[in-house]
Image (cartoon, helix red, strand yellow):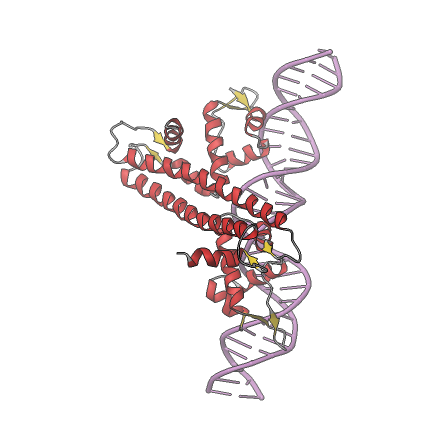
Length: 137
Length: 137
DNA sequence: ATAAACCTTGGAGTTAACTCCAAGGTCAAT
DNA sequence: ATTGACCTTGGAGTTAACTCCAAGGTTTAT
């Protein structure tokens, strides 16, 4: 069991952020000390790690709360509910990956045209590179 | 040449957003009518399209401005400068894709465990699914 | 036993990216 | 020539996600 400052330091966030996440229902201290200090266990580290990573890939806190609430918990949710939400989030992710891949290819093209490209490329920009990507279906 | 409302409608953004982008230096009307109306050409549509897509994959407006400023323009930038910035952005994208792929796999796993999984899975959540993904190197 | 380094709550302030509003000018159609 | 749908600027308001601050209680080290 450790306190808020130790958890914060471990994953490089501020204690204010952790209190904010608690307020938003994302990460609650599993216990309080007699003096009222928040106490966390290693479970909390995993959960916070997840929140941080999910934020990095572009989920907002509401989405993350939803992701964390997806649980195969036969008492409370039907299989259909869990599956639908899970697949919905997966589709969102797939769409992002597809878009990112297009950007990646156009940046690669731009870099290649820059050094060693055979064309004159006096005015090549990411927009023209993107056209080339789209053009090469 | 068309006016701000027509451009906005075409790509489903607000005219306020377009004025905001102009203020931020992302998309300037190439001309003004005698009465001061902003006038755009089809070039602007491409540029706005790019801005919207880049936003969708998680770039902020400052990043997008930087992306749009990457141009193989031999008058103003050295090849090295262009290439460095381009590859830096590409690395950012690759890191996002890698992270998203992990999420994708864990969601797939979660969906599979839900319907048809052989384990009891009374308490399977995305966190345990993620562990399984990490575990299977 | 007291200073330094923690923690608590409540509330105000910040930043990015819009979004809305007021007061007024422009243009096409009736 | 006037109505309605456009456009202008400047500035205020909103939302998400923090970030900071004040006033005070707790723990640890000297």
